[in-house]
Length: 79
Image 1: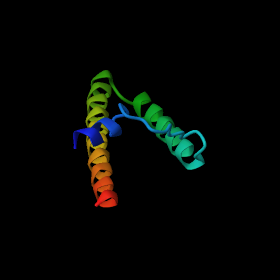
Image 2 (image 1 turned 90 degrees about the vertical axis):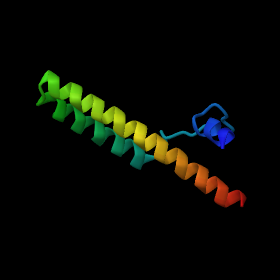
Image 3 (image 1 turned 180 degrees about the vertical axis):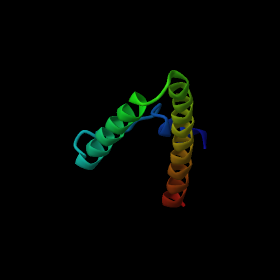
């Protein structure tokens, strides 16, 4: 699976993936940023640090999950 991981993490990139043309993606990203700014404006420094650690863990979890889904999808397509 190593080659699929390299492909997933962008070390092997056959094509560029452009999210700027996807209106839904842009809207969701703007909503996430707007809500995060509002939320952080209400937080203490300690809460901001905890939230930062939480979002880092969620991001890492999502990347790992997305990579596994990609690998499984690739196996289904090849198999």
